[in-house]
Each structure stands twice: as C-alpha cells, then as structure tokens.
Image (cartoon, rainbow over all chains, first blue to last red):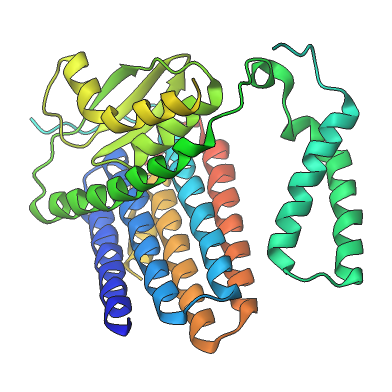
Length: 97
Length: 170
Length: 72
C-alpha cells in the first residue's frame, strides 16, 4: 500500500513539474492553458489518490474526495474564462508555420 | 412535462436542502448546536440566493431527470481521459512539436447543462481547450491539429463523452 | 515555484493569470499533503477555502480584464 501511495505521489509531482515547465516553454496564451488546465488537475488527482491510499479510509478521505470533485469541476471553468477573456480582448493565436 | 415557473417556496426548499446536505457533509456531526446553526444559515442563504441557484429559463422546463446510472461509467471515462491527456501534454512539452489552431464543433446535445458538461470534459481531454460556447457550437482550441475536416475532428475529439452524456440527458 | 517566474514574466495579463491558476492548484496540493501529514482536519478546510477563493478570484480577474486594450 505504501509503495502504491509513493508511486502516485511520484506521478503527481511529475505531472505538476511538467505542467509548470509547459507554462514557461509554450509560446502563447492559448497553448499555455493546456498544461495549466490538464497537468494541474492530473497532478492534484494523483496526489489525492496517493493520500487516500496512504491515510486509509476516514473523515479525511471524505474531505479529500470533496476537494477533488471541486477541483475537477472548477479548473476547466477557469481555463474557459481565461481563454474567452483573451479572445474577446483580441489576442491572436500563435501559428506554427 | 412543462412547468410554467416554480413557486418561490419550491425554489427556497430546493436550495435549502442542497445547502443543508453540503453542511452535513462538511461538519459531519449531529450536535444540536451545529445542526441549528446549519438550519438557520442555510435558510437565510436560501432566502437570499434562490433566484440565482434555481433558474427558470429553460433548464427546468425541459427537465427530464438525468439518468444517474450512466454517471458512473462517465466518471471512469473522464478519469482515464484526464491521465491520458496529461501524458500527451507532457509529451508535447518535452518535444515542443505543436501546431495549434482553432476550430468549430457542433453538438447534438441541446440541454444547456449537458453542453457545459461536454465543454468541461473536452477541456480535460488530450490537447483541446474549449474557448467559447454559442448555441450548439463549441469553439475549440486544439494543440496539435491533425485534420482539417470537421467531421473527422468531431469524431476524434468528443467520441466518448457525447455518447454517455446523450444517454444521461436523453 | 516556477509559477512565480511566469507571473512576473508573462507578456500579457492573461499569461500572468494562467500562472496564478496553476500556482493556486499547487498550493492546494501542498496544504492537503500537510493536513494528512499532521493528521488535522482543519488543514483540509483551509485547502478547500483556498481553492474556492482562487477559483473565484481567477474568474473575477478574467471578467475584469475582458475586452480591455492591451498594452504590452
């Protein structure tokens, strides 16, 4: 059980690291949304799964599941809001030609 | 099955039970004091915000109750797609082999709630972010454009989700 | 922590906002890990409220910036 938990922690840190790296490396705002929206959620989810495996079932687990559901719902909405704001203020998407 | 509009009391009751359920989930205790506090505050908040929480326009009127037994496979599909999508994003971050572009999709889903769910799940799939929803059309930013034809792209992006969502909100 | 670099660096306001969004997610994860480590429920409440506040602030700032002229 501890090994599985450690595996999920490692996975979460991996996703988080590459998410942040992607934010810095990508060229424009729309492409930057991809790591922010997805790698963040996946990193959080794997860290939470690892914590659930690590802590066993208790009240804490319930709370963690609540936070996870909240994050999964709100993170795409935030990405959507940012993208829409960017489109309406007229930023052109970057093209690779 | 058409309601003209819900009465005020119904609205308040729906909001009240939702808030009370959340409060019980949070505090997880059955003390009389915390119960009383929860009842008072959820009633006050329900009184103030029921107009925004339960909106009359269209959502309730075409409301067939969603079939919740399809929620479970949907959640599993969604989890799988999240991890797959993140792996793709990590790959793109390492190699920087990207070719972004915008394109429009059409959905068959007509209830507003299902469209929002579909948009959120598209955002979590490999390499796509939903930018805008106008009625029955989604504007999607794609990280790595492979085809330019619309039907092909539709098949690739929303293959799994629309099936399950269509079953939930028939 | 590299998110701060992005926030300071970004050419437009929206780039900074993306950095802020991811930083909120990371800090939520850190708070939850701390909460399980110390075995306190209060940390999890703090994490939840932090996530809600981050979400609301990102939405509010992006609404505020929508349709503004950009001065690079």
